[in-house]
Image (cartoon, rainbow, N blue to C red; front, side):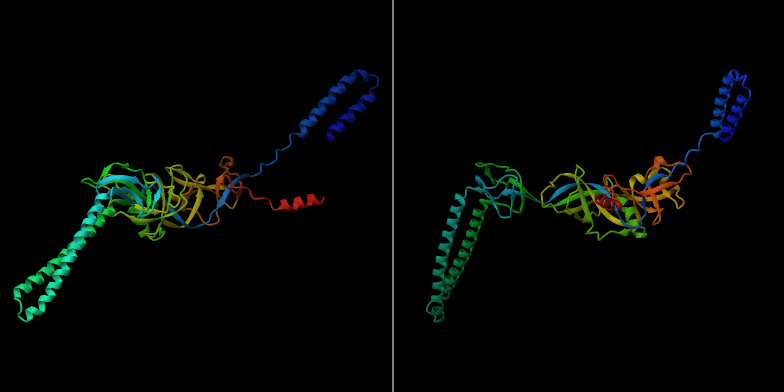
Length: 419
């Protein structure tokens, strides 16, 4: 700009010195002024663009610890107890005493069968017992009277033996009478059908007026105990063997005792049953057709939401990985060549790192090798990476997590209120 100003001053001096030719030189002077101004702008040149700031990327800080290895397996629910209500006495059903689909308690009356024949049989047995007791009293009295007479040789020993035999027969008749009365009472009790277990009863299989128990025990209803529930699920024999091998070699730790491992049930809609179950047993044999091992767990079901026959997914923690790391699944790149993550180094640049994934846990990968405590692993912002460029790591928040309020916000609002 100084050089341009100097040139313009020289041009004005030239015009003043050439007064006679001033009007002719005026257009030329204006053109020279414009040309010099353009050259001045070109000489200044474009201003250098400001350097781009480092791109912000979301990171998580590595924290090591014992992480449970979860297995998600297919399973099916089963009632813990199932009882078929059957008629053990023949007769006509007179009344149904329960509501279909309701919960019943053990011993609760369910059906009533015509009991008149059984009441008559009981009365006949009681009468037979009474006759037997009368005969026993008479035979006992006769034997007691004959005893001193035979000792005095007043009667023959044969007569005394006959009296004693009659007494024993009367006693046996009384015992048979008691048994007959007991059988008649049992048959009479069978006329009232009661619940063998507590649980939820299904629909009635017979109606009033039906003849049941004629030649066979007629099914009348089914009761299922659905609290607690059993869930039967299968696991590949190869997975079981590899897990046992890792435990034996010390690569993994046993989660808990085999008979108390916690089990979570996932329903068909993806929701999780609120009550955790416990593993009961693992079968000793492998299914020859499928190569699977059957396991069973017991799950509390106080609300009755779990139903027998329902297909579910079972989440089971069978072992723990020591010094492992949990990472969001989007932070790990999985390929045929291996698993990698991007780690932000101390110089602010991101570099790939090879890791070893041991399994998944609720939307996260369990990393067993390749990372150290305190390192920063990128979770998002991969599209902002430039080769050799530094990045600015910021704490990553999972989607749906509310952002923390800045610490200066309360102070700023307070100062605004004072003003």
